[in-house]
Length: 399
Image (cartoon, rainbow, N blue to C red; front, side, top):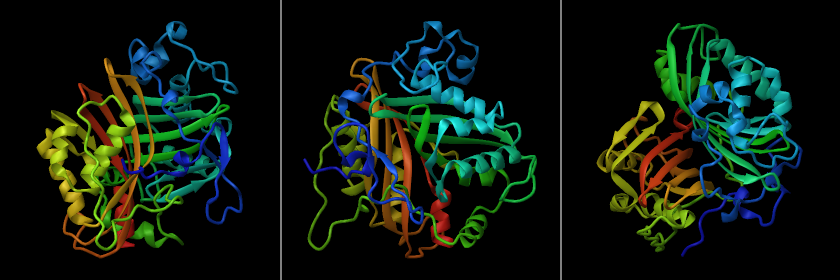
């Protein structure tokens, strides 16, 4: 089996934080990175989950008596939090909906790094300022928890993949212009690494392009403007370990068949990405997905069935014919009987040489990254949620 592409999060061994050999450009600091999660760090059931709260979702957390909810060791965290899911949902609500934005000082490290569509947001003060900006633009904003996939522990750190639906009305000024008065509904997935009551790394996949379209703005023109205002362009997250590339010369992508059974999630996921994205075996999707799979993604995309989803994948590869995709972070929870919830953070590099919704080919090389969540049951993906940096792609093509 070929060695999978690995990110800094997956490259070390042992437990605890390690030094990042490639700190953020211009920071002058050594960043803390965290060791990879091994299979034994993946929860084997759903006793600690969003569903464990009687009503589920954010309201279930706020209204439920937590005494019946499973606890776990959380050294260094405030005692009010019974488990890592409890921590993630409650701090999100307190910061965004209760408007205690200053609680970021207690729940993010001073040198935290947050990646989004437009690049790296470095440091706690920048995160506070950006959160104030968004709340000013949508004072009635709500972040409704849809799922939290987690893994890890208090020693190796907790990894969480928090899927939310963001709701709000643009009644305030923002970097995109004056208030439009229009409602916004967009999918978001935030992957965090937390320990000692602080988030140290976060990758946030917003449906920014979808949000701008709902506001009635010209999305390509906005991408061009934002890109022109930056001293440096948007970069994909965690490409410090080496960018994925297509084979050179006479080389061909390795064959990595999708297993019939999803007993080994790591093997299943790597085989899926290698087969579909890197070897271009789009027929493999019939062995990967259930026939009735439901997909929800960026810019309001909803696909039903393998045929519709395959058309989407074909359209992306057609626009970026030399794209190569690598998995940067992977974890899951569950078991073969009850099913699995899987979080996959991935990144790709490809040149824009084909036609599609991003306009005529520019030939420019793009960094494309996103977060995918899978629900696997009966050895097939039943549901997929994928949010990727679509606005960031436009910035790279048009800037």
